[in-house]
Image (cartoon, rainbow, N blue to C red; front, side, top):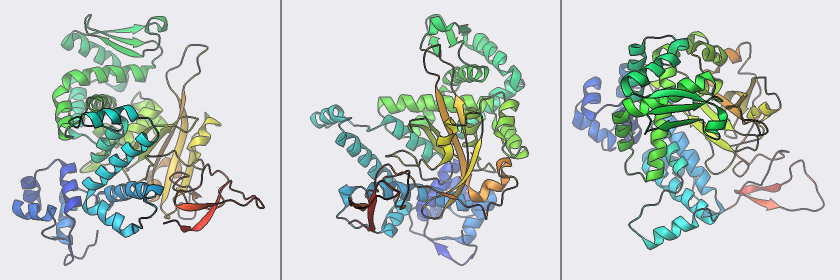
Length: 481
């Protein structure tokens, strides 16, 4: 943000998002900034400017990094719009990039609406949701959610993957239990038994079969498969406690999301329960302090908090508390076929919502080196550089002869934060050449990529039987209109 106190800016939507992320009303933030609530209302409606002086006061009062808060959402919204408008459906419409940026900044709600409409269109076009679309046509009173998973991901992103009510409830529970990490499982078992009359039982695999956890409401028993490792067992107990002891918090957060169909509502509730469980295992103040002191050494953090590698990586993406913020990480979980099953971002990394990932990103190489943690500097076509680490993880073992589940976890941040990581020690980050990657093949316009799986949808495919290039696809330099 500019430091010139005389410069006036119209940034209503982003100012409103900052206030909402802080969990403050217009009256509360007005008191903190020394201005009137009516002026705050006018600022958020873009009817009055906000001076850089007010923005600096906002940063000082609430310990905010305005560079992150003011651009992360706009960059993500712009990436979504750019992906949508790159579709051949809009080939005859030349929408300048600046117009997309203006729309992302001033009308984020419209951006979300367009993205969801495009998602529904894409699925319908592929024939995956034809029956649901036909049902919606017959009953105009029925709302249609195109994809519950994507809807919940949108809600998590809208909250920057941080839920203060659940964080506080988790801290209160840990304070009440007052046990070290290695004693958490026994304490949770006792809590479920004494406060909720729920007995915990570790069950043999031949009884649980394909189930890792099941709550028997009739017998008041929480059954956990013997295949689940110790960190996973503590996580499942904390999840069950969260559903019972944080029910009101869960409903409040879900209520803020607005009208939801049954599937995304249930999935959001499960996701929030998982969030609470991780916060119980890794309480915010202790976990952030340890992460900073250890320079974000994931393996040591996993040992200290009796957690798994993936659990620690996931928890790192949630450290967005005002006045106590960690590095804004992004996370990706992918299988060896390239299917993305988890993605979170508290930064600006532009994940694709309608395609896979770039094969040049070494997160895919971890399946060839299962016992090694890989690190890499990556660079997007717009020149933005990131530092990432990746490692393969094994989920709960499967009985023979079933295939053993394996996933790759990629964790990264903008290059400006990388010096705080133990994994970047000894590296000259300014001089290290970044591996050129794209968001995915369909949007990447880099030429001569030997790993390209399909041509970019923004360029005209060139077919020439007399020439064989490094890439399987040749395409024009001019953007197709």
